[in-house]
Each structure stands twice: as C-alpha cells, then as structure tokens.
Length: 66
Image (cartoon, rainbow, N blue to C red):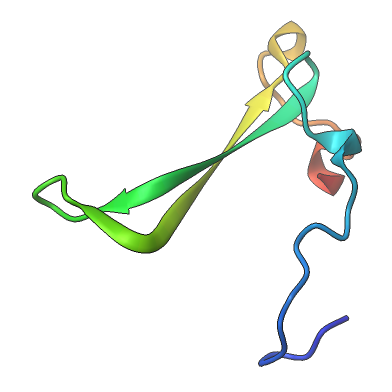
C-alpha cells in the first residue's frame, strides 16, 4: 500500500468491475468547472454510477470491490 505522500496507482485493480453491461460500475472523468461554467484546466471530477437496474441500482459485493 502506498504511503500518504507517494504517487498512487489507481489502476492496480483490473477492469473486471467496470463496464457498460449491468450489473457494473460506470466511471466517468469530467472536467471541473467554476461557478461561471468555465473549465479549470488539469482538474477533474470523478463520477461513479451504479448500473444494476434489476436490483434497483443497489450495489453488490463485486461493485463495492470496484
């Protein structure tokens, strides 16, 4: 496990938990905008959605691992 100030590798887990076919977890990287809707270069928001409509988008153990 990396220490607090070391570079972290967020891709150490494979893509087995991500996808588009339910059940899955959907990850989006969106640019950060200021209150006037101007894009701030180099800063992003991570949007994570649960895609499991058969169970009313509740999460499964595999989705939590993702």
